[in-house]
Length: 535
Image 1 (cartoon, rainbow, N blue to C red):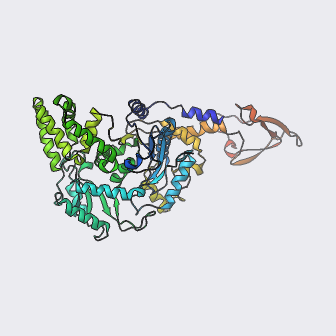
Image 2 (cartoon, one colour):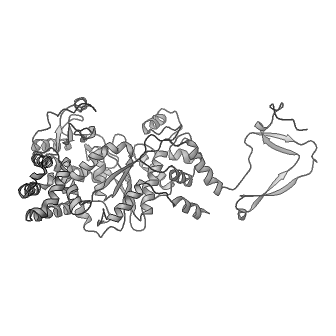
Image 3 (tube, rainbow, N blue to C red):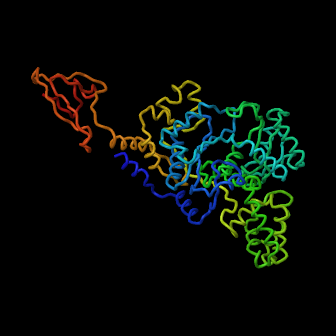
């Protein structure tokens, strides 16, 4: 019975994520990928064989609270897709904020994932990681960005940064420290690491675009000072990467193919791509060397041979950043876009030569141009896809509000049966099979604002119990019933099946006599109107 039920649950209806994965596998978008058995830069990965996992996904909670029913949808989605596509799903904690994190949360999250029926290890691999595993890599990438004019140390206050960020209708204002020399920013950043500057006195910001329509691209902070002990690294660090910077780099280092998250991160995808593409010279060094070899070869070719590269560069001009080198190329590409006849042998070679002269600042452009002209996903970078989050009627699923309920003593801990946490639902009587069935039924889409009625959750449990649970009779609020005209010493027994649809489960005896127990709500001295008194 259990085998049939699990088979029924795994027969998924297709959705847009499955369509994307199917197409990527067909096109070989993430092939060939190497895997050395653990996360690391691609220089390390090249030491391993071709990755046997068709896809690599991850479930990346922050260890700052207990998981709730909304997380169950993400767990079932990521681990389920990995299972269905002969892949792997990594269990990873985004522990970049030592102020709010605790080992208690780590342990509870691991327990909830296991309870749902999923695991991050098998006979060949154990994929259990923390963002803090990569702090050294992230620091190296941050220094790389400073050296190449892609990040700077900002000494404005948090209030000034917020005020100068602009609004949806007005562009942001450049920081007075935005154009400070890279050498100065590098010195200050190293001093930040050494603890020479007070908390909040400065941050490291990425240099993206202060006039972007996407506010998330207006030079977001990527490192801040925190004099707090980390639950895993202790006091080794006093600067910590921001989540929006760390998360994409973790995906790159873990060789993730499809980074699946909820729709509230859709506006962050642009910076996700910025971080992964700008990290290529560090995280994808062997592939970056291949790109340089392609450029060197193109420099020797004729106009007709390099024309596709030049045309793709014009098409993806928007991928250029704001370094001086990129602005110079942007001017040339803009001229060709306005007057296509200006694309000739001289201008095409000028494009290739400009990129080949300093490829480390052109990695976002190279990712799209080489993916269009040489091989899909040339640098084998992960791509972010968003799905709708779970909205359940009558249920609060804000982690901040759930934490407040616990800290203010309004509930009896995280596992209070009234809480929508997985430990609370477990204590209430929900089974992992019911939770998986529920997540399967609600499905995934890009539609926003949709709500799932609470009855769907209850119905999932009811359907699982209907198939699994033996039948029993109980009287919760008993009142004694005496049948006056029934013999005093007569007891009748009869057989009742343990499960009406599965007679092979056997039966139990039920007794009937003069004295019985009934529910108090089923008795009334004066029956309601429309009911007749039994005589």
